[in-house]
Image (tube, rainbow, N blue to C red; front, side, top):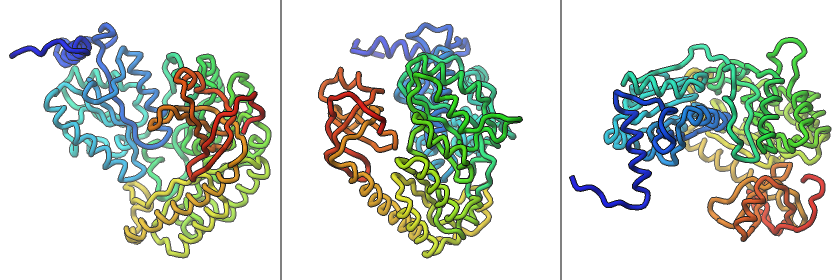
Length: 489
């Protein structure tokens, strides 16, 4: 066979191919024993919530600690992993679609390890292998720390491996030894699982019951992150404001944890994702009033504005109770902005029920809403109930609620036009090279231009003041004001 002429990137390709060949042979070489240029690589695709994104960060750290490199594309990787979501059927079907796209690559390179991990793996287990025979590894939500070793087992045995705990419990160590922080922001999981029993939700099945991490462990982790340059943290939990209720004795609850984190001098902002109205306690309301580092953007999913639907969902509150909690929060923090999740087309939802959701959205004035058509999920109580709302009705209600949310968000954003806001620069725009995206303390997205590339890089993680010239339902647009920043926006 005629060899290809040497081209740019050829040495890197040869090193990659050698590494792939080495780890596919029977005389397998552990990744940490390969040189940097020969090390195998992992490509990770994440679906779903912020907790999944956090888990993916932990997974990559485990692989990096074992000598792997991160591949940007599946074609460049020796291991391809999908961190999955089971909340809706559509999310699982997307995973199978991605797996189907890898069939040719797997035929060309049978030693490629393909893994399905996370919530879908936890729910489906070995069924994944039946539907997608090209998969080598199925790993549940509590086996993430062992992923590199499980990949080794697959390579050595040449057989598929399923590692799914029947009764998932919280893993002992959330993070391995941390590498240098890659950005000014980091996610920190304060707990795992959920003790609630919403009839539509698969999370207790896939994530297990609540297991909060000890406060001292969390404080130690955040201090380590801050020492590496992190200035903002997002505290994660399926119901983050239920943190600590499962811990023994007089353990800190979320508000107490926020108080302690606020004492870390170089930590500048604390975000929360996501919450449940039942755990909006007086102490948490106090924290919003007293702690300036706590973000004034609070995800508080309503799911529905109908008491009848909320009861069938087993949400544990009424629309009136939800309104009371919002009123208390806004009395404590007048600049608070709220985000909600909504489910339309839940079994038995009438036109009148849906109109009550529209009314609640309009009345509360949410800054953002995530609207989902109801999708029956196996292993949930609602799965046993007839899915009696026609698909076309679900689609129509979904679009109506999204349009209403756009109107409400535009009204809230319009009030800032002509004024100056302070915001923290978070990232560059993917579509517009000179545009930066910042966020106010209340969660408003702020876009502004910076033509100098070095300055764009220097601004990441810093606070800027922006004169707002116009608004859309999705954010504020303006020009940077060159003056000393004042109080947080």
